Image (cartoon, rainbow, N blue to C red; front, side, top):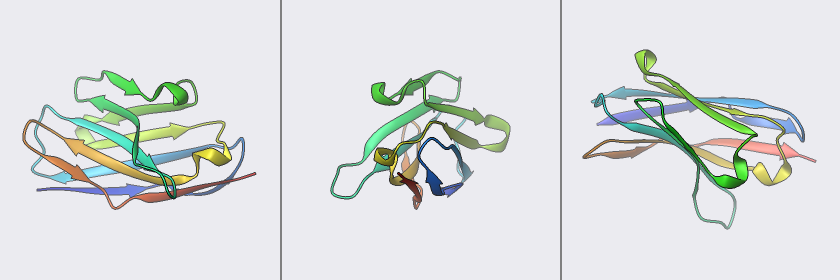
Length: 115
């Protein structure tokens, strides 16, 4: 079992920045992928970015350049730096952990960008 706790969401004006954090605890496999997904009202959950334990990253094409994912393996923590936020970035952001046999989700953190 892996438990994920997200933090850092909130309300921000358009053009502002937020940094999300997600701490993983429990039965963490050394080789894993952690990432961020988001779900806006009435829409499907979509990948924002993910990062492998070795450091390689993957981003949604539309978010490259504004969002940056990083991780601290010693702290089992993944971060999402979000810059130049737009109202369309408003969504619930979910942390995800997966390894060869498991797939877990956090409870989600709300990000609201006002125009």
